[in-house]
Length: 525
Image (cartoon, rainbow, N blue to C red; front, side, top):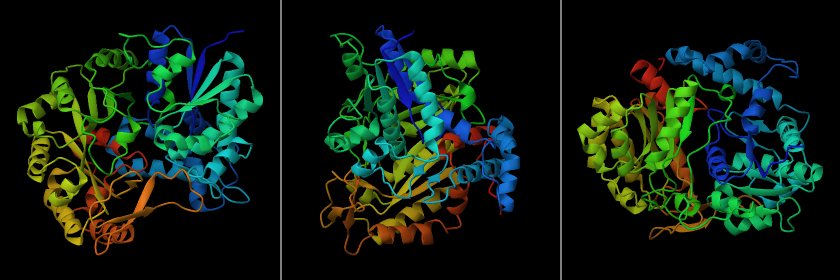
């Protein structure tokens, strides 16, 4: 019987638009160390099995009946480039999938909320260690249990791995992942289980609260997983060896993913080269910045050429100026998009022109605020005059912009919020997509002068990541929500930017729409 060293599992729920880069990167590194490693995207497999009409309860209302009848066509549309010229049709297809998932999760009591991007249980919270233990001890995470446990247990029975690794990057994965760990331990008690990922890193030492007796999890990994996994598998890192390798795309089933055109994920760096924004999780998620690896590009090029993939998504926290300069000379004939900061390098029209020639079709850019005073307090390190110039140059050179705005940062006053709205309104002709949110402040953040931070968690949520704050005359979360809903979202210049955002898939599909038409999708009046 075949036996491998490690089986990596990617549990639901994560947006099913592209394969899990973390697992591809781990597999690439460990296989080059001579280890026998396989991986399984349980998230994509779960959505494949959930998004069928088989076994659905009989729909009762008119829209549910239409959704069940139109499900096959909706799935086909979301995998067809033709939908990129039919934004209303795209939104309709996403709504159909959402309705089918609602029907799938309906039950007699305590119905969970299952969407393309999230899983919320009515009784349990992924922020409570006691609830995660309950999931591991045998409670069912309906309706995910069957569709994720079956493939996982079958793979373990066939491959007989010495270790099983669960990758948990989002709160939406935590309950399903612990439920899966419990089932694996019950069925295969001799198999050892390791759990890592961004969320585990952010929880830090608190992960011990989840399974203090190590009944379900043998080891937790904080930070990058390559070296710890190699060590527990008997291949310790030696001086001079690379600490990471290009992803291994060899076993990806691209047909599992929902995207009008397939998107290949790639990260050239780890962590954030800036790392000073006071509202950001990155400094804890990555202890240090692991710089740009342009030598990873040929691996992605070969896979894209072999599979006919037209897009690369650079998932770096932010493409550094060095990365942008390197990419400006790249000529692989591929389209790409990714995060960048409003660095002064982007004020160079020739560099932006070269980025477009390299295939750059959209940049995701964190503005956060239109108040220079507040940006300085945030530690953003950008100047609004540069932002204005960069937006104009990107627009003129044909590169789309997906801009992020936040309100409710500690110490933000009403004038700061109004300046943000005025800035976006004034620059709306040069912004193609806009995402607005309320600031979530990490628990370890240092408060600005005059702002009192208080714990922000529900009853017993001992694994919470954020803190609340009392801001005197400024914007606390309640006031920020009012300003976002009543002032920003209703503004005549801003509202169309928000409505262009592809539902559920947002910034992942926005570049595809922009390239297909040369402009953002039109917003119906």
